Length: 79
Image 1: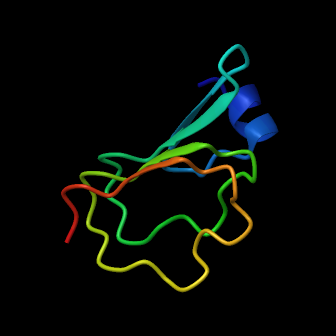
Image 2: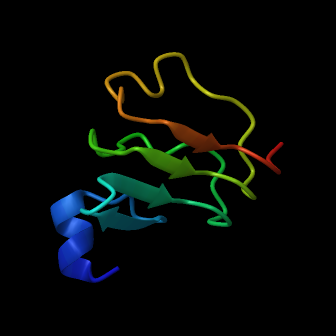
């Protein structure tokens, strides 16, 4: 994603983000990013989050609070 798009969408630094206006989804792809924790800020418009292939050990309480649009979460292949 371009730097302009990353700023407009508030994409987390180690992630890649995409928006499909036709299908109305906002993807935050943090897969294989070397993460040991889930990014603190995720855009409120996020519908899909890919966090697979990282070093995540736990999900903090309320980690996804206010993210009611999420319908896909991939946590495969973490610790």
